[in-house]
Image (cartoon, rainbow, N blue to C red; front, side):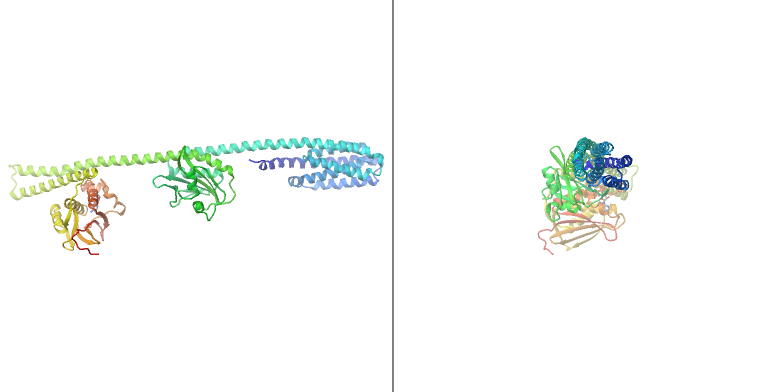
Length: 595
Ligand code: ADP
């Protein structure tokens, strides 16, 4: 803090003091005039011009004083000169009267009084000294040259007056100096108190922090208020992407503002990236519209900015940017303050970031644990129901007392066989999943004619979909078992999730790729779930699918197997409602290509 900002308050106090002194001196001066006037009447000198001229001059001066607004004048730059002039005039007037021998005895003590007052009034003591000197000189020249014997009579009191004035001025000057120093100390203490108060506000904000989304705007807002800045932004380091990301919302003029994602590459020439790299605060006094390094500052509409790294010991967390669209608002010392605030802020942001990452992992682990436990209960259920059905059928056929007629026995055995097949497929699904996990899935690709393979699949699932293969002899490069498993899964799902509506199978080729689509007209799969259903154990609507059975493994196997064979699978919506699963595979090398 410089004394320039402190002095005005001391000067104001001095100005008040001086103007009141002037007003009072004027009042006293009237009394003085009356006393001298009375003396003049008694001594019969009041008709003489050496009396009349100064006394009239003094009267005019005092009338002027009475109507002058001293306080305003004493606050102006001209104060020393006005005071000097006033005192000079009064001194000359009274000194002139003191030069009249009949009045010397009355005027002389008054002159001493004026000298004392002038010292207090003019703590610009050089002025005070000058005033009295000038007054003395003029009085000496004007009234005494003609009467040589009066010179020592005037000179001695005038010299005394000068000494008195200079001494009081010196005392006043010291007093003012002391006042300025103590006002400076007071102001400094006040600034420190405010600093502590604001620092406390920042620490309180940090202490309340629970999540990054909550803390960042609040922290930036508090720091902006503290540094009297209009815009504040935090950028956090994204280690995976080697860049700094602006945390939304940002702080703008007392409000939080959501922004689109803004990023700054760590190695960019940007002054923000530089601050991060150098781990040192930077003050951008003037944002250069044409500079590559000021792009972000320009985007934020800033004319100047303070940028500080957020760090935890040696490691860096990000950067804080505090800026202002106005020019010349900051002073260097605010950069120091921002630097000292950035240290605890970096620590807290880092801790919350870590805490959030940990919470995310814990949540994910909990989800996996729940998925696994759901899976165990689903699989147990899926194993038990076909087993119960098989045992029931076999028991019935096996009990002579029930002796079911031949066709019924036949039906029961067929049903038992189907349920056994279901069981076998489930167990195989589990085996495939475990092989996929171990990366030990065997693969024997060969040229496969789609028509016979699809006919075989249809027989296994005992569903009769409509089949369109174009061209008839379309073939793909694939592993026979894996492709059968894929198609069985998709067709069974179509029958399961779209019961009562027709299932259609299409196969075609384009750009050297073979495509097989399994189309149903059921509820379909919402767009936002289309990627998720290929994840293991994922079922779109738990309660609904549970009633239809299933483990949530089928589509994950379809995806993994398609990919190991160099293909892919995707979901589209069926026109008019329903799901269409499209499997894409390399076309068999013997097939002619048809672009
Ligand atoms: P599940 O054993 O549950 O059938 P899948 O992995 O085969 O497991 O399927 C995952 C989820 O995708 C199912 O639970 C179901 O919600 C949804 N789904 C699969 N196929 C269809 C379809 N054809 N129509 C609607 N939803 C489907």
